[in-house]
Length: 294
Image (cartoon, rainbow, N blue to C red; front, side, top):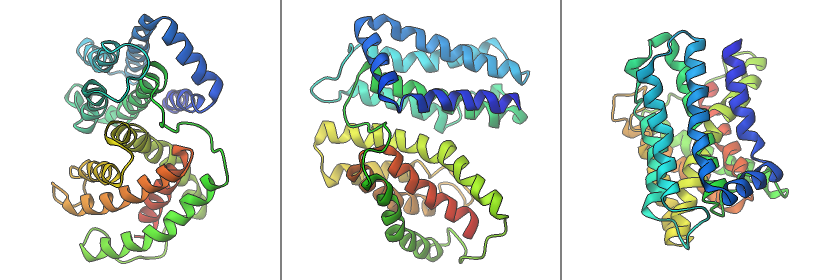
């Protein structure tokens, strides 16, 4: 139960930044006193250390690793100063990589007993997303992240339209390449299926859309121009991020193909909507359907 509270608090902090007032307060504070950004890795490291202590696996080496993990992206951002440049720099993309790759390759997993790895990985994931939002929405203040509440009806129907178009393509391609079996009736109860939608949205879809659409795709657009090419590059990066995922043998090229196709659809919805919540909703629908019907 206490573990759920920790994750809920992290999620609440992330969702709080959807509102304009907290986001403006964060941006104003950091722009007035840039050095305050260094309190963020300290606080986030403390959160992780507390979570580790909660499950009885606190250690100094693990805490130091998390401190280095949270400080490195801050150093990249701080070296450039507050506010966006004319276009993202190499250090901005390095910041994204420093946030993403240690989690992608499970850095530090050897320091955590297996029973605690799932919980602490979720905590680290929440810390990474929160730190990314603070750095790119608050400190660097790049436009186009679209981390805000829906602003028009298009934001609600675009995920449904995108799902109607891409779901059949993913299903046919997935079965053809042997990634998924033919569709079947769901084996879980309706209550479990409904509850899973929220878990998938908050635990997988929204964090991945913040990373791959709000940060990677958006910064590629700002750097190289808002073109189809940057959307396809972002989708390919998203696909490659799934090469180390099962259940097929690694590298999982089947998953990469499907994720790249899905990434194109998510990217289009992100471009045409006013909020990243729309592409996250489509992402959730795709993952939810795969989980229960294939």
